[in-house]
Length: 428
RNA sequence: GGUGAGGUGGCCGAGUGGUUUAAGGCGCACGCUUGGAAAGCGUGUGUACGGUAACGUACCGAGGGUUCGAAUCCCUCUCUCACCGCCA
Image (tube, rainbow, N blue to C red; front, side, top):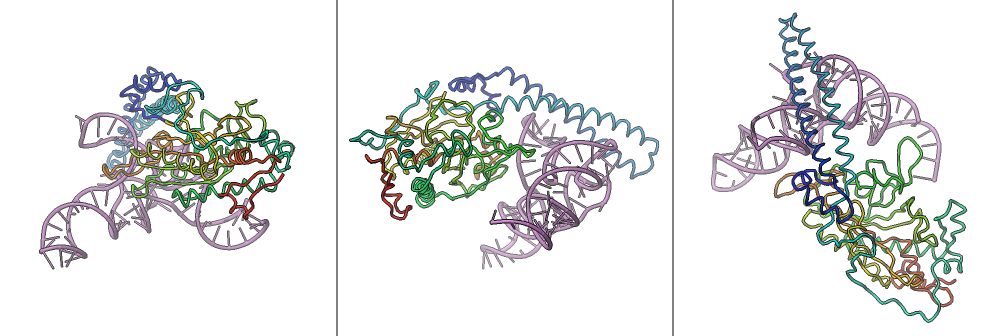
């Protein structure tokens, strides 16, 4: 959610920024609603004020008990005021709902340095790390590698549930688990995050707060009962919502949390994309990094989160590149996003394995997460950020493909070996 | 799942229909006092929206309702605690 005061004070500037990401802001519509809203609020409040005064007067009249005849008259006037109040409030609520509907559908403002563009081709590469390995044999993709060993079974996933689900077995299942342990440990011990464990089912309010609702309901799995719970599409939702409606003391900032969860995405709009393999599954695991920081420190925090995610790929020896998403490619709630893309030899290209975003006050405004600014003594919105550190399934794919041997066995990266009882290779 | 008791400001806690615009205490901040401190005294101490301001309005777990008037009465939900049942 954007600050309505900002739209009020410099509508052209805001509209221009939103154009960068392909959103047309209807300034006239907002201004009209705003004007109407304030008039109605004013009217409603003075009626309430009058009503309160009457109620008080009545209390006095009754306690003095000397104005028996006046009481019915007062009562009548009170009744009139009540009706007027109800009417005014209804009008006010109607406009408020319209205003909120529109405001909640406006995406975040991109940062000034976000490159223009309409899709991923316009993203800006900011660095590369590692050199893709030269293979002396024909590389297999992870699907073939998994099939060879029988440790990656998409047929079983399809039988148990449906397409885009999979079963891992043996060494692959173990390495998948080892990866998430390694990631959590690194973030805790080396990067100073606190590990949290959170619900995988969330309510509508939580999803609204982080920006998945109301606009992106079709991407979510919803439980079929009257409680309206949803499966989390990312740990970002429950973890960020830990602090919903809270005022945080300045001494506690920055708050850095890491969390390993399964993620569930319906991905209604992506049929035909990455149908093969575990790149795009309805269920996958991810280790998430979430930070709550003072507003002046969020740009720096985004760089740190990106570093923390990249550190894992470096330790695993996986070549990657980091890109800054262009205006047309950044998500609804983000003001700036770095994607980290890992090298997949079977595709001969870099594929997204992490997405790190600065939301500035966009989520905090919806979630009412504030900190007490010592300079002003007042509660002010803080900034939220998050990043994948990393998508576990995709990391597994990258390890399998980059560490494959000619016979289809997979070398285990040194750093993971101690998480796998010293094992050095997964034999087909 | 059943029964019972609860949810009031940073914290404790009063408040069962009308001078409560939430008593009192603790804590905190500032001031007075002091060589300094403690004690004492005084003042202040929530959030949001509107207003240059004075101030107004809303908020006593959430949402509805009754009433001229609701922290207080009624309904639904939710969370906490206790006991029982069930369960990994």
